[in-house]
Image (tube, rainbow, N blue to C red):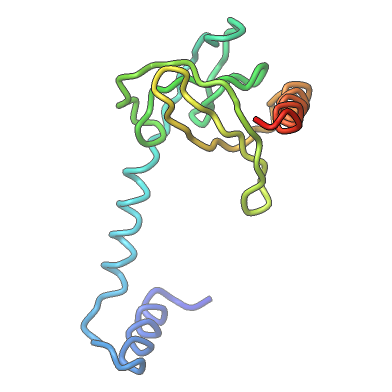
Length: 143
């Protein structure tokens, strides 16, 4: 991998050779993207009590659902911002594989908002199997 200067020069040259304006600053584009990502995720280390099973959960800054029953709570507009006024319980409604990673889809019981969350290493395999079984049963009933 090259230096920052060589990366900038490479991007500058590619842009110029593609017939576009060579005045576009790749460093500016990168910093704008970093700022956008920072707005989307804010790490907060918080402990919480699960709304569903009552387990006391010790957060690590990435914890967004109970590792025992997989339920979450609608507290964020963007991950970690705590800007959602709803506060409703969010049961897991599906599991999906996205980019090779298992994700849990939560749906708010109060407002219907949905969000995908990454499966954490400490999450209960039994709860994940239960979720898959319940989804299979629901789909076989046509719902």
